Image 1 (spheres, rainbow, N blue to C red):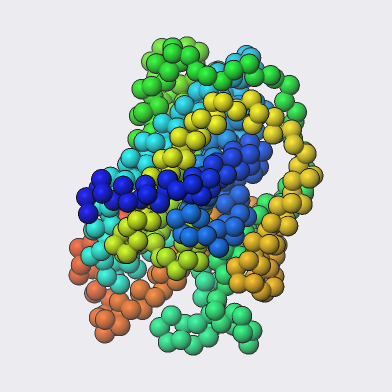
Image 2: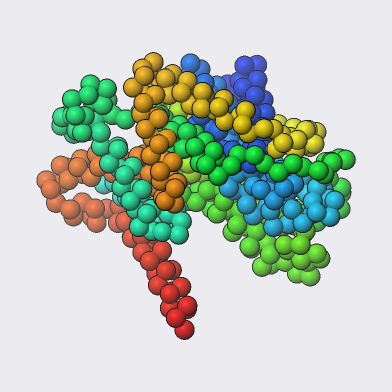
Length: 498
């Protein structure tokens, strides 16, 4: 089918009353949670994913995509008003957004963030729609050796998402891979690490672990450091942008949107990296900027927010075409699809083409609603940061329990969720990153099964991994990705010693 025919097929699923209502609900929930400092998009999607289990896959994805986009956009509101990003990816928005608010231009900053978020999301979805089918077509030629190389490449990204300590990142990733080995051996069918517990023979439920890591662990951490937020004293008079502001940010917004989409397509990068890169590039290329970047320049807000939101469509490219999560949220989306027996990967475009293109169309509609709700209701979203967190977190804990129980209707998954939450909390105390564990959980089984299958095909000869050009090219990229952080660390040490 042609691209237009596929898009029409997807639109027929999206423009159903229930699907549109789910998009609206998802966007409203996402904006609400994103406006609260500390409520990350990942945590919100992980806690609420269980509500999609009884829906059709396309309907469930509409709800989750609405939450995803809404939360990423709304993280800019507390970043601008109280210098506290609602989500990690809004951190770069603080640099110019908060100085604007201090001058009394909070409404102007929020309007710029809203327009830039819409453009960034829309551009990234166009990139996704054009590139994802081509990537999937190439991936259809993949065999076991290529899939192992691809999973290995994804695992090497642990080095780039490990934060300040590579060792802690590797430990976190290996722990995720260890958890993924629980259950039946993928080749021989023998139980592994089940310890006689019948429930463990089916493996550890990925969604239960995610709810614990990003819901319970975050809540425990919030109670430890203090959960109340600073009150907002600034009133918003209006949030519709002026023509002059639109003209001033148009170039940097479009450029940052394209860059952000391609950065988001790099597995493990995410919106926080995309926003900082686009902000830095806008600052580097700015000429005669007045005021300077960091002092309340609207182009700084536009660059950060367009890059941040453009990462969403980019992150879906490896997620849908290769089954490799682009960021933490898309890792949860993979789990949500797998609950419905839908496996992301190149075959998805052949077997579930209507669902794929419904995701494309639906995500664009999500950003249309973000634009409308953002401009009309921003003054109301801004008041959410004053909501008492002592009432919010108990409700989130209840949702975590309900979500884990809804997976299979067993208390065992609730215990898994609580155990993962305690583990995640202990890791947070010692600054162990959680993202590498997520990568290990998802990519570990893919790497193991395809490595063993490829060696079986080649009678145990490792030459199969260098005999095929695509496999060799991916492994070279993986090696470069693995060595780059070490080279960067060595360069930093050399500069500090001189």
